[in-house]
Image 1 (cartoon, rainbow, N blue to C red):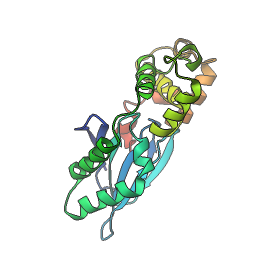
Image 2 (cartoon, rainbow, N blue to C red):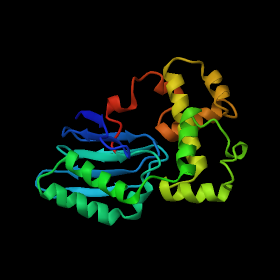
Image 3 (cartoon, rainbow, N blue to C red):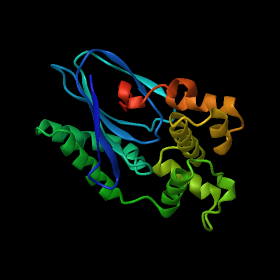
Length: 231
């Protein structure tokens, strides 16, 4: 079984990925906060298609022998509308596959739906940009987001992300910590730089988000190298 991914061809799509058929496997799925349309294909069976809620903690997926899994991952902050009309999106994706289409055709279906819904409000885009810029180390209370209230921000995030702003910041801080851990930075320094209470706090958060401790993650190249990525 091998994993591959390419960038999306629409600004609302983060990527299109595939696990090719192979031996049965257990796949670690790390938290990225994104919504995916997932297709699972097994020999002699109709494809199983589903819109997956955003993964906000590490999970384990099981792939059967000979099963192909692939999907379209929405850009962070754009996936909520896919969840709102999941049945409609799945029906359109199934029709595209039945016409002989593959990942590119399903990507177009997702892109068309995102275009129909339009871009997220500025408050969501601003929060996503801020979280990515400082790797989630910010605190919502220290930011005004213009004249918008915390309740307005919470509601908008629930609609467009599928979860609240604190969860987004936790995920992005974890991703920032992971990058520094793999670069060889001392764990205590990483915890302090990104605002964790202490190193054990960071260890718990990293394990929750990525399914392994910082020490274990330092010894691997990429979570998806070992077939981590099915969503």
